Length: 617
Image: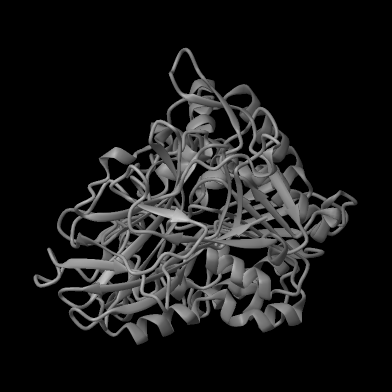
């Protein structure tokens, strides 16, 4: 994990560093940020505070800080909550004779607290907003010291992490109290990314006085319980990454009750209590309050999100009756907006530009085109054009991927088609996918092994590369058929013969299988791939399901929804459905000694043909 530096250790920010972050994103791993991104944020803060002993910024960033310092008063207060916790905060108060709105920004789930997005606060100030950023309770770097004890970084807040629970909602209201007294704002908006986005929604729904006028929620969640535990499957890798990225040891960062919840989740016990804990922290649980308050809400999310899978955000969005917008992008958590919140871009940056435009209209009353936006905008995988950079060998996007506006999520899918699974495709050891039902067959594989068919290589960074134009390539010949089952269609011509996509996949696929396992309980992970003529593939979507109450050797019919996708299948490519028993992201039922090495059998009985329902649009 990168660690923040003292002011005197800050390196000079260079254009080359900024270009690298813009090109590759801010994450090195799920629990590590590019040091150049962190250094740029710290250099901005040090310059604003006047604590840098030399010029450490590029000319453009130096000019930006000077503009804001001339127009505003900069502060770094501590805000005391009702229970005495002191929150680290940062204020930019515009010098204005007339009231101005304030944007409150709870920091994301990061050891660097509010510091990381300093560039965003400066941009907001130039647009005419007061800014109040703060680190939620418990978050931020905490370093053990010799002999015992800890020392907190200046941007670390006191207390323990409540994981967007009631203490965080109350803190949000306390921060609003502070903002009202200090800024006397005309309106109040919340903007958050990741953890800060969930807190933003929850404060808007639960502030006793209903004082939040708009919310921007980037890489967010609607239902925390479903995000972390769905289809009886725990999203272990996501929770492990979050625990490891708080900035300090578990015993310091979480109280005993939260540590118990996290331990129960990791062990797969007391899951009813874990789900109740997650539901309490779900903005979807308070959708009636949000609707009653008519809070304009802007969502930005990704198709291949590994922390907060996309379906639960869509479901929450659909229940909102407020002015709303849902942008769906290629990539994974924070990929589209992360760099744009941290450093300048040389050209348009729609994930951030549109968030600002939403605020401008709903908070400042700017007459822009936001009212004419469709409520849903889907960026389609993988319709961008790229070139190879001769100097670095990297893929560089030369044309952004196509985006499709729709009046609602329900309008994204206009029809469905059924692809029935067959025993063996012509000339192949794999099963087939075809239009007509085929029953009476069985296929089996050995459960309990990881395979080359996997959702991602790594949380966040695989999708970050995907957003930047380099989606993961799968070599389907490496899929070990002993440990998984495969069904592949014939090459699919362009729909309508017009040279367009073979299939315009739009929406939530659904899979129905009949399964049994020789040991009883088992896990199935379904992956849908786009396969080209050279047998390489890209992933369209996936989803696991755990069958905990199977009786050994007994058939069970199971239907489950995969995650939503917006994907154009190229002409003459094939659809490939893969089912295995394990993925590094999830818990599985095969870790038991009896299940590891057991045999899973997929079948298609006469009364329930196995099939994939593909949404089209």
